[in-house]
Length: 77
Image 1 (cartoon, helix red, strand yellow):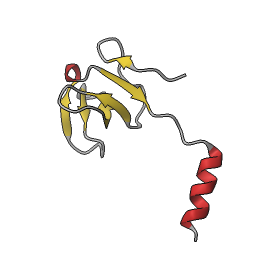
Image 2: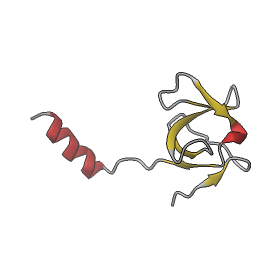
Image 3: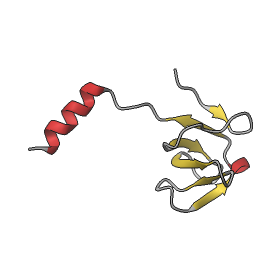
Image 4: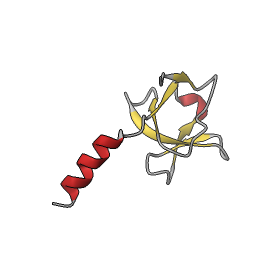
């Protein structure tokens, strides 16, 4: 089960966006930039903030297969 994780204890090990809780915004999506050790914007294009500016983060669960099938059907109509 996914849980919120404190940034001071752990950073994401994925190249997928995660939900973050920074003090300057309630919730938003961002990418962890392991090379620069900072958070990048949700389009992974620009610097968002330093590591310590984000209190905690949460891995976004994958979309269940049955939902993907429903979404694909709507897109082809």
